[in-house]
Image (cartoon, rainbow over all chains, first blue to last red; front, top):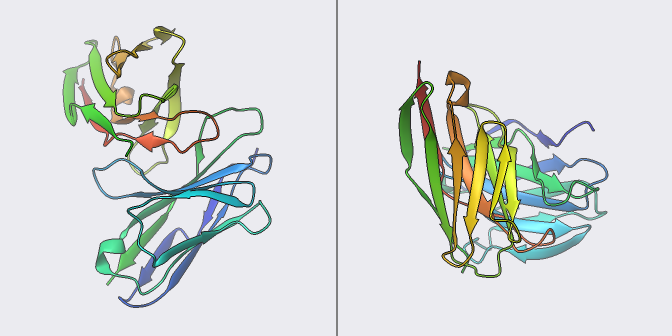
Length: 114
Length: 112
């Protein structure tokens, strides 16, 4: 169990630029979740996958956000035309592999949009 | 849509006292209720959970209670210690195949 890893840890970008984050879940986990967390708030659900299938995307999520998990392993989250309001910690979590519903979180990617 | 509310948003207790955090959920189909602890600058980690077929669960100094009729669940920490200081999140989900919805969090401070 090497844990959930996310890359990069920090990303600073200018408004209007596109950014992409990567998440590598625990290898035997078939479910992968993306959350967004701002200071003083709980993780806000963005989207999740069962293997390579994207099962749900938050209705609050702008069309500028897209996520993929092409081979059912790692996942990418892309934000197009970033806005200052996108600044947040983006957390990835995975579950499954006999651990049931327990979510294992990565360290997150801190995005700052200038 | 699904929603989880949590109270209080901040809680300060003296070391050795008890702390109680309460949550309510809107989706009556929710069946699994985990609690996560997030220390400053760290990732959230599961500390205890409860399923809908159980009314109470205890693990050493922490316990959770669930009232499905009222759609309420609570976290109880007894004999608090300074290392209990963190942000605690309640959450709810229907099954292991569904999304997990988190509450806004409670910042607990245990004063030595």
